[in-house]
Figure 1 (cartoon, rainbow, N blue to C red):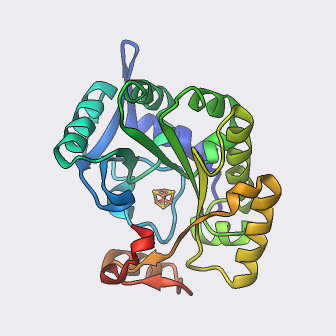
Figure 2: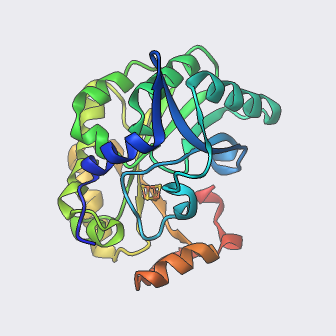
Length: 258
Ligand code: SF4
């Protein structure tokens, strides 16, 4: 398969994982769960991503459209609040695949959480926010939202190698940060960058940090991601002939990553 365009892929995936009834946009979900990340977070795993990362921990369900079931924003909100209250979590998130594909659904959900004391962490690859600055403006309306833009590698070539997408789309992740800052989000407060550096050499990481600092000096506090060698992730890496330079075993995950 040649390189793909993640904007076009997002449209294709949208048709498979979203459905509109009246003015309600439903999204396909895999499961709801609690989790230890961020010191405890209620998590809903969505199905459908516009990237196909070759280190992806969720690759078995990520684009499996036979799994899961459709939920409206109300049902997702109720499930996440129930889990958060039960475990006394402060945070909620959508994970597993790409939440921004279902824009209307996501914005409705954010609106509901805006009236609570829970903080919504939007984990995103950023491509769609980089593509369309009106998306960043829509997100900037919510005060209890934190956006975490997760870079796939630290350079266009790494991005292409790790995702199989055209390397030029790496830039859209920077544009996502730029659009969000221009829309009013404050880096280091309600916006930050994460980056998969499992395949990056030190030079590439240094260049990446330099580029972030030129965008905004507060962005250099990056949430670094290493490859977690779950057996099914090793299987995927082997399939693509990839050997990480930085990885951790599931039982060695440092506290800083959790
Ligand atoms: S963006 Fe995230 S969910 Fe999508 S393929 Fe990459 S790692 Fe998996």
